[in-house]
Image (cartoon, rainbow, N blue to C red; front, side, top):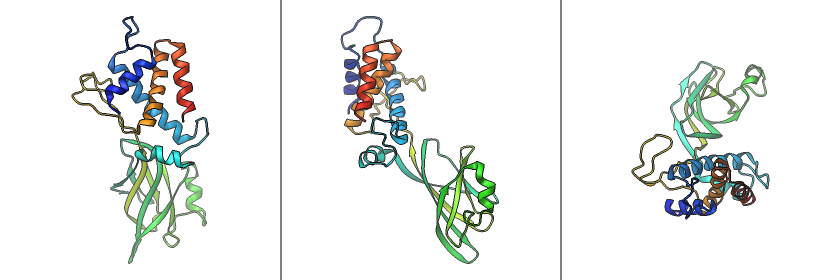
Length: 232
C-alpha cells in the first residue's frame, strides 16, 4: 500500500480530510502513530492477546501474518568457558530458536538441540544428569542475559557456529518530505509498510485509535480500537 493511500485512510478514519480546525494531523504524527501501531499489533499477535486468543504459530493465519518478520542470522560466537554466547541483533523482537553446531575432540560438527531455559535455574540444569549439556545426546540449553544468548557446554564440547532465528522489529515507514519523528531529519524517500494490505488495514485502525486518543476524540478512538481487535 502506498504511503499516500495510507495517509488518506488515516485522515478519513479521523474525519480530518477537510478539517481546518486545531486538530489537524501532521504527517509526522501519522508516521509515529502507524509505526507504534505496527509494534503493538505484532506484540499482540505473537503473545496471543487478541480476540481469538491465537499466538505465535497457533494457526495458519498467524504463521502467514508474521512470517515476514521471521529471519535467521548466523552470528559469531564467543567462548565463555562453560558456554558460548552471541550478541542479540539490534532489530531483535522475539525469540524463536537458536541452532548450534558443536564438536568434541576428533568428532566432527553435529547439530545440537537447544532448549530455551530460565537463567534462575542455571545451576540446577548444569548438575541435572537428564538436562545438562550433552554432546553424546546432542542436547543443551540456552539462556538470555544482558542482550546476549548463552548456549551452555559445561566445558565438555566446543561450539563451532550458531544461528539465531527470531522475529525482528517491523520496518518503520517513512513519508518523503516529512520530518522523521525518530531522528528529527526530513525523510528524503518513501519507505512503505512491508505487511500485506489486509494487515495494513488493521494497523491503520490501530494507528487511528492512537491518534484519536491523543486528540481526545472518543468516537474515533472506540471505533479504531474495536475494529482493529475484531479483525485480528
